[in-house]
Structure formats: C-alpha cells, structure tokens
Length: 247
Image 1 (cartoon, rainbow, N blue to C red):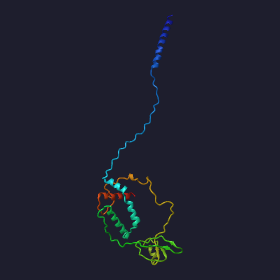
Image 2 (tube, rainbow, N blue to C red; image 1 turned 90 degrees about the vertical axis):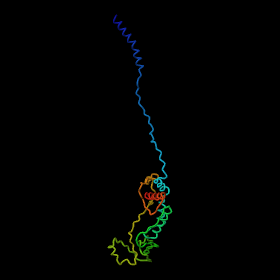
Image 3 (cartoon, one colour; image 1 turned 135 degrees about the horizontal axis):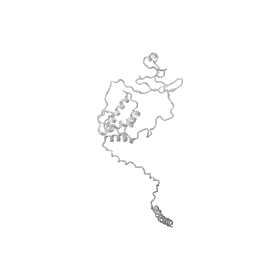
Image 4 (cartoon, one colour; image 1 turned 180 degrees about the horizontal axis):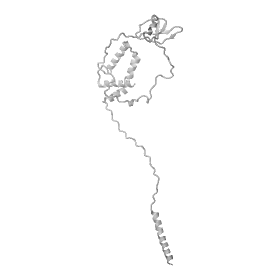
C-alpha cells in the first residue's frame, strides 16, 4: 500500500512538471540560419578634378594654338613644291624660292629677313625645253630628262647608245664612240602595275590626334633664321616647325 502511494505521488509530481518544461521549451527563441544575400553595389566613379584653365600668355599654349589653328606648313610646302617646283642649286628657281621665303618671313612680321651670299659654287643651270621620242621602227614617246648641267644641243635624229659605265675606268670602253649620238645613262626601271592608290589617309589609331599633341620641350631650338621677331611671331615659326616635324 505504501509503495502504491509512493508511485502515485511520483506520477502526480511528474504530471505537474511536464507542462512547465514544455512551455519553457516552446517559449525559448530559436535561431534560424538564413543564407545572406549581398546586394551588388554600383562601382564608384572616380571624381574628376576640373582641368585648370590654360593661361593664354603661356608660350607653350600660344605655340600649340598657332600650330593647330593657324599653321602655314601645308601652304608653304605646296607653294614651294607645286608653284615654284624643283630648286637646283644655283638655278633661277632656287633664287625665286629664296626670295619668296624672305618675303613670307617679312609678311609674318619678322624683322631684317634677308638673303646671305655664300660660295663660290659655279655655274647655275636651267632647263628651257626638252623632248625626245623613238622614231624607228615605230614612233614611241620617250620619257626622259636631261642630266643637270648638260650643254644645250639640237639633235634632229641620231643613234642611241646606252652607257652603263660604273666608274671612270669602265667608261674607257666607250672612248671615241659617243660623238654625235644620243646617250642614255639611266637604268631601265621596272614599272609595276598599281591596283591601289599610292596615298591614303591615316586613321585615328595610326596618326596622333590633334587634341593629344604632346607638349614641346622647353629650351629646345628647332630651327634658326637670320631675322629678329616679336614673341608672337617667334611662337608662329616654332609652331610651324613642330607641326612640320610631325608630318
């Protein structure tokens, strides 16, 4: 009987403690591990510093402005090459080119632009008129040019001789055989067929962009002229020399 009462008391105690334990477990907060999702942030753009305003009185800025916006390089090159043409030393065209260059420097504002004598050199030479053609066995226009300082002659027709002498000793084999004859000295050139234009315009990758022109180094002289100039005129000449070097 005592054993039964003891067992009943134990069961009663257990039944009273069970709800409290369950309640305590149910009220305990549970930690749930969830996967974290990181939101991609846009890349931060570097803060661009405002570029300083160029000083209009800076010689480098003035040289670049003259070279990029008022360059006379192509006009000068075109006049000397296309209008005046070949300028053999001592020729009238050489004198004409020198005088034109002097006058242009004066026009640009340079002072005391003048020509200076040098020499002695010798005789000048100028081509007045020349034409040649093959007349036998058929008429063929001949593309030729007289050798500089050749004397002027008038030959209606004569035998043609090709002289391929390499030096004075090699020329001995033609001694006494060239009088009254037309002498050809240039080698025969191979003229290949062209299927593409000989000139083309550079792309932006091949040629430097105008806006990315490098600053010229200070204290470097690119040319020397026998004339005095103001600062603005000297900047123009220097800019033209720099642009011509890039071309």
